[in-house]
Length: 409
Image (tube, rainbow, N blue to C red; front, side, top):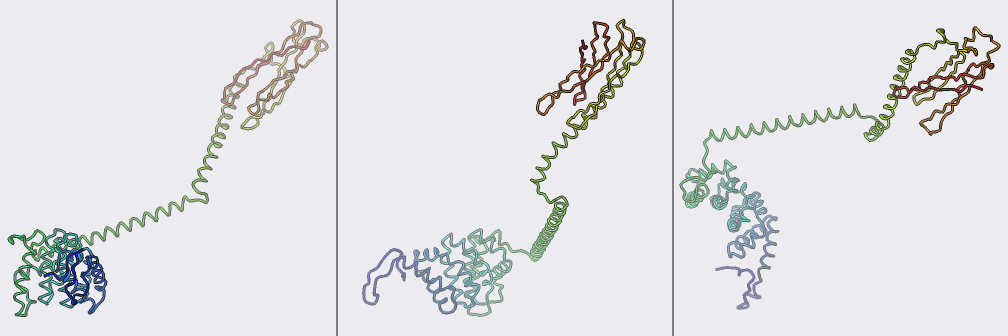
């Protein structure tokens, strides 16, 4: 007969002994919350809480669901690991077995497997019986089978109990419990028909156990060696990067260096272009000047009547230029001036203006050339004077010009 009514139901009191009517399911949830807080206590409070939880989980389905929804698996696992009282252990495992019907609760009970694996080797028959029964219940889940199979001691104990070779049960009054524990161990280890072992619970020989242990140790050592090698390599590369950065790092940052390069690169290119242009221009001037034959007048070199020193201001510096004007005075009859009388020859000067456009402002610079010419006053006809001029550009080319100067009347 159920001790507690189902959830969300009420019964009226039939006499003064019952007092007030029973509370609804919300009161049960509150009571379970209070009992869960008492599990952290030790002594009588813990024993009373476990006893009441065991009764609640076994009395009705609704109460069992309420206990499962409280998520007490972690606290019950702590109780199994901390206490040595056989009655408290049995009550805790009874609660776990009752709420294991809920799939979510059964999946959460993986935290209790380590404690159950240690309790399966207990010398107390009741504790061993309860542990074997609960392991049989949990072994229905594949994930929990994998967790149980990781404990070799538990597997050996289950195989020993199933084969009735356990020496821990020495009390003659525990033979019935031993038989039941052996049956539960069989249920935990074998398939539902009992013919074959479950895949993860097959017994292993000592050689297989030693081989697996050696493989585990080797994996651990290789993992440790690889981790140490990786750490050493990372540290070595970090040191190399620090040295390289310290070697190339200056007082200025990357942005400042980038701006400096942007400013200096065009200036350096302009200087190099100016130097190359000047060298090419000088070479061209020399080649042209060497190729011009000397000015001959009647087979004789002309006399230098005027030398003009010019200073040209260029973008790459100042360039001196010397203009030598040659003239050969003649008489009215066309004879050279050397054979004529000097009194009949009068030296005159012709001044012309030459405009040179500059690249800066576009304002022409006027350059006056004073050129000495000779004319005979006795004659009414004077000769015009012509002067070839080569203007050299920055690209190294030259533009030939012929200056024709009018005579003085």
